[in-house]
Length: 266
Image 1 (cartoon, rainbow, N blue to C red):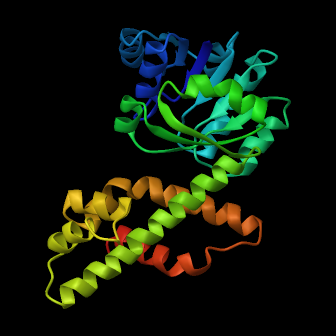
Image 2 (image 1 turned 30 degrees about the vertical axis):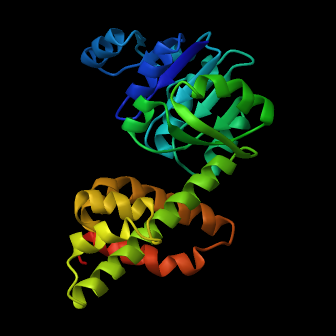
């Protein structure tokens, strides 16, 4: 496919590499000559604007950090206006479902495809994608996304991918909050944190929150590495859920406990 790509950073650049390796032609918006040289070395074609990345593309993938950046790229950067009829806009950015619905309201075929995993998962081709959108559009994107993602899960209509990702991260944050409480209880009982985490990773309480914390020797280590992303996604989730009259329910206290840890007060 002829692809456009905007947001070739920590997550986006390995996506671009995998897309090129899969035989796709990829034009990537870059901000600096150095970034352009690096991406050209990966086999992509650097261009100087989002509109140039979108022009004549069968699909365009966005992997920027925030909703505000999605809107700036799509409208301020001219991406939406440059899209060809029948092309698909695939938004990897985790954000408010209202953003992708606003884009679809401009007559654009949109799928929301937030992800779970990191650059190492992209390199291994095992990133998880939660896809929301019309079945036909998701299926058209599936071969492209499969260059770096497995599984690609179609979870419902447009916006559903964002809801699943936000719920995933809310639950993960709550697990880290509960794990923080568990570690403190263990410390009171004389069990060192590292010992407890290693033991729990082999027990029935094992989870990604436990095993990743154990690998770092402390819950705070994982919280520090994931903190900026979790803070952003929790803020987005709070706003999106509030607009629907929904709250985090019993997840709320555990999420708040994690927020104390992230703030450095716990």
